[in-house]
Length: 185
Image (cartoon, rainbow, N blue to C red; front, side):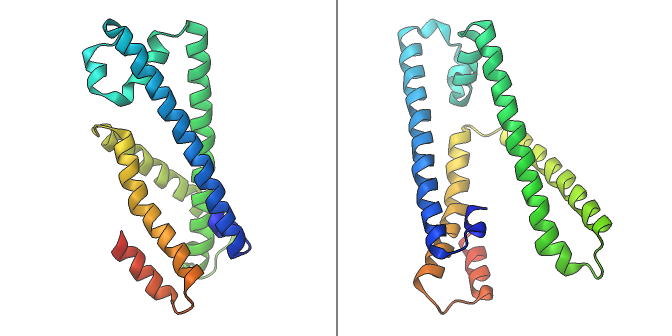
C-alpha cells in the first residue's frame, strides 16, 4: 500500500526507507527480547520444559503464560488478540478493495454497486479461509522466523527489483515487468 499510494517516485522511496528503518527497530526489539529470554532461561534451566526448548518460537508465549503474573499475561494476550484482529481486518479489507478495483471492475461486463459489494465480501471470505489454511500448514514449520525470512526474500526481492527498475530505467514495459516478477519468484 505504501508504494501504490505514493504520489511520486521520491515519496515512494522515502516511504521505503522509513519502512526499512522502523522494521529494523522492531527486529532489534525482538532480538533484544530473545536475548533476555535466553539469559533468563540459561540462569534457570529447570523453568523451561524440553518440548518448548525444541520449538524456539514458543519460548516467548511460554514465558508470558507461565512466568508473568496472571493479570499482566491476560493484558498481553488481550493486546495480541486486538493487534491481530485489527491487522487482519485491515489487510482483508485492503485486499478485497484491490481485487474489486483492479480485477472485478475490469472483468465484469456491467458491475453494479451490489455486485461489487458481493464480490468484495466473497473475496474476504475466500482469502480469510486461505489464511486459516496457510496457518494450519505453517504449524508444522520449525521456525516462523525462518519461514518469514524465506517469504520476505522471495517477495521483497521482487518488490525492490521492481522499484529500482522503475527508478533506474525508462525502457521497461508492464508485460516485461510482470514476466520478470514471475520468473524472479
